[in-house]
Image 1: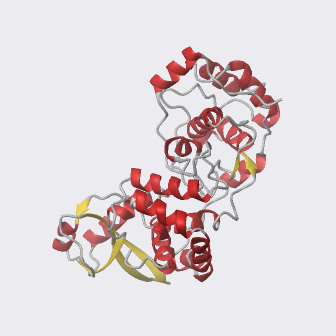
Image 2: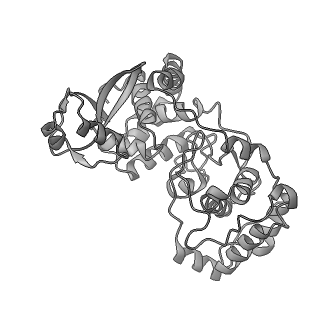
Image 3: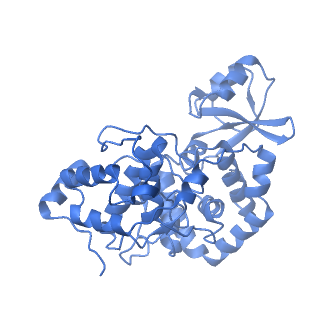
Length: 361
């Protein structure tokens, strides 16, 4: 029998007062979130010395029991429903193996070929043509170019073809309780998924996504879904798995909420003579720390129209072995970067969008 995930009136008031937990950045299309401590403020105690969930199962694991007690005490989730949920969640050890697999850095010229080549652009043109009316409507309403919306769906899931097939009940539970390095983050996302299931009146065992818990065509984590997913088609469901109107509006809503400015470019190529000072700036973390005017004073010359007061990040891309092009990323660059913390990702989204027909981004 399907379990209903509803709060009592008193518990609902507690949840409303608490608000939603701020999300860490999306773990879309792979592992993107920064390492989180094993225990954070407001989190249940996590004892990394406990045996693997593979040995005990979820219901009997001390950290799972701590989570259940904590959530029940906070009034967010019902203890009996949580126990029933964990009795049905399945441990997926292969996810831990994937998460522990060493990352391999790619140069831009390989990343672009794999993620923003002609096949992805042609697929975007076809997807846009099939859904142009609603995507254009969303673009006008949110002030985000239709081609950017399409490009993100393309790079995330190849226009909905690769959305993942893991039950979130299994993937998030496994990572929350058998991946100590980031247990706090995945316990948060597990909680968000359970709250999401109640809000959407769906069985928490029914949601599917990537091995890291990202969902649907735009690959939202549950916390992002709760904050930014949109029921644009008005059917009472925020269906980011199958409703193109909901998907397009959700992506646009995310970008608008993270500062997208209508009519502004994403990035501009620059010319420069590399100095130790500029190399140090390039190596800094991605943020809009300097103005274009400051960068000009240091010898960075934009090869496009951009005002000196605009804030920017200076970066480079390896276009061939040991050959680099240099760019400044502007406000809209940073808005897309908040979707996925990768300079190459943002550039690939820009290239797909321009290839679809945006031009000038």
